[in-house]
Structures are given as C-alpha cells and as structure tokens.
Length: 458
Figure (tube, rainbow, N blue to C red):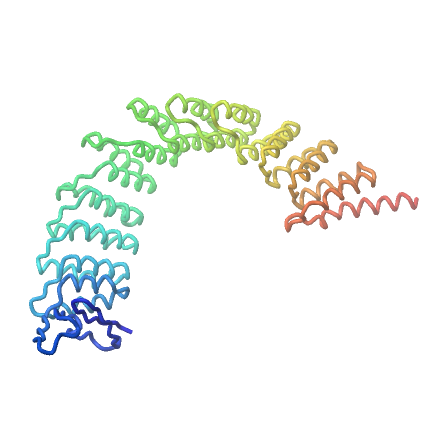
C-alpha cells in the first residue's frame, strides 16, 4: 500500500491509497487550523503549495526510491513550488543506491537548468555510488560534471576516481590521461595520486613508467612517502630485480625515511626466493637498528628460506635469537623448523623442538609428527619413534592414517605382544577422528599376527 499524508497544525493523518493510482496533489496541502474549529470561526483556505521542508521529510521517509521520486514530481507540479537542494541530494542518493542511474542523470540536468548552487558533497556521494556499482566510466564522468557545475574537484575526488579506474586493467590509460590533465582544471595530484598510478603500472608490469612517475614527484615538489618507496620495491621484486630493490631501500634510508614492516617483508621474501639467505639474515639483523623491530612474519620468512634450502642449522640460530629481540616463535616457526630438521635427517634435534612446541601449547601439523616418526623408523630408532608417539598421545594429539601405517608394522617387528597391547590401549584413549582411521593401520598388525601364528605352527 502506498501511504499519502495529510498534515494539520498539530495532527498527522495517514491515508492509504493504491500503488496504481497517482498521488493526488491535495495530499501535500497544509491546513493552518485545528482539526475541529468552532462553528462561528471561518475555516481558512488551504495553501496550494506544501513547504519544501515538508516535501523533504516525505522523500526522506520513503524506503522505496521510486515512490520518493513520485512525491518529488507531484510537488514539482504545484505552481510556484521550488524544491530545496537537500531534497535533490536525498533523492539522488536514494536513486543512486538503488541503481536508477538514468533518473539520477535527469535530476542532475534539472539541478543545472534550475541553477541550484551545488556542493562538492553531492559529487563525493556520486563517485562512491558509482564505485560501489563498479562503473568506472560513470565515475570518470563525475569529474567533468563537476566542472560543468563550476565546482572545483578536490584531490580526494581525483584520487577516488583514479582508484576505481586503475582497478580495471583496461582503464589504466584513461586514469593516466586524467592524472596528466587534472592540473589544467586546477586540480594538482598529491602523493596519494602518484602512489595510485605507480601501483597500477607496477602491477601491470610497466615498471619504467612507475619509475618516471616517482622521479616526477621530486621535480614537482611532491614529497613521496614510505608507501611510494614500497610500491617501487614490490614492483622491482616482482621483476626479480631484488638488488635494485635493496638499493632503493638504502636510498630511502639516506633520505631520512623509516621503512615500514611491509617494506622489509617484501625484501626478505624476495631475497629468500633468490636464495640470497645471507643478505636476508643481515637485513633482518639491521631492522631494529634502522627503527623497525622485526616481527614474527619477518622471522618466519627467513626461517622458511633457510629450511627450504637445506640450512636448518641456520634456521635454528634464527629461532634461538628471537626471544632476545622481543619476539617469540609461534606455531609456524616450530612447524617449519621441525620439518626442515627432519628433511636433513636431524631427527633428535627435531624431536627436541617438537617437545618444546608441545610444551608451549602448539599443536603440530600431522605432517610434522609423521615426518619425525617416519624418520626415526627409517634409521631404526624405534624407541625414539614410540616416544614421539607417546608424547603426542599425552598431549591428546591424534596421528594421521599414514603415520599409523608407518609405525604399527615397525613396532610389531620389534616389540612383544604385551608391549603392543600397552600402546594400543593408549591409542584407544584418544578420540579417533576422520583422518585417523586406525583400522587401516591395523593391516600391519594383522600381518604381524599371521606371521606369529605361522611361527608357532612350525
């Protein structure tokens, strides 16, 4: 049901009317008298025009944007009526958010033809609406629409439009054209404007253009910030030009900038991928001196780099250095280190760090315990393998099927039946989960029992 409104000086009456019938202009009339005037008092005639304030309230109250537009249109038909600018603004927002963009365009034409004084706020809302609707062309048109209304775009308007444009690869060049011509309209790009374009060109692989923009900042007295340097570092690292990225870091430090955490993460990742582990470790050690305390991400990046290249002993050194630098190893640190030590056959050392890991409440991934148990079994250290198994059970950790498939046949070969019974009793105390189907591991136990029976029969 469509609700139209009768207003009196002290009462408001709501009158239902059909959605299919047009709004009667009389519903927007005002009466200045009370609802029940004395019989000898002359009834005042209604004013033929509702006030702009009343119409604004009606439009604002409507959740249906098309109904709000209908109220707006009915009020417009009244002789001598002129909407407030606020009514235009509210209606444009309602229609824009509901994606009735052609109606928004009509209202903008009306604002222009009726010579309303328009504020930059309207265009900020329009850019936001078009961005949410993912309409880069419409957002770009807002910049030139502002000029039609003699409203000078601000750098924040330019930057918001640029952000939307560069998010679409085929709009990077239109964004660059707008960036280059903005100064003709009195809009001068700021640091954020340059960063947006540099980031877009770096992601697009056009590193030379990004570098030119970076150099232009100094020519035009636009001061780069930490993000400006970081964007170029990331671009260089994507192109595997890690040495140039490190040189840029030195240039940044020489200019008095303090690199942020993400800048160091970018360089450490790239150095480790390039197997420049010595340089990565030196950079990690320099961070604190240069004003940025290394965090767990930085340490784990270097730990992973060392373990991946078969240098687990160096990774151990990094882990041991962490507490003195105010950072404690986390789950990822231990998992990476134990896995790296197992890969190098350093099972006793790996067992030590897994025990430390469990004591601190970290749950090892099944791949970690599997690698350790499998490693001990492969070198004949069955007691050590069962110790790991016992510790896992003690901390209520459930092993994977593959781990059971490895340890059960090995233990069956080494232990008497009584020992096996003890182990299985401990196992059954632990919840059997979907990825821990001990029934499958029972195949090894079955083979053992068959061999035992055959030996007795002989």
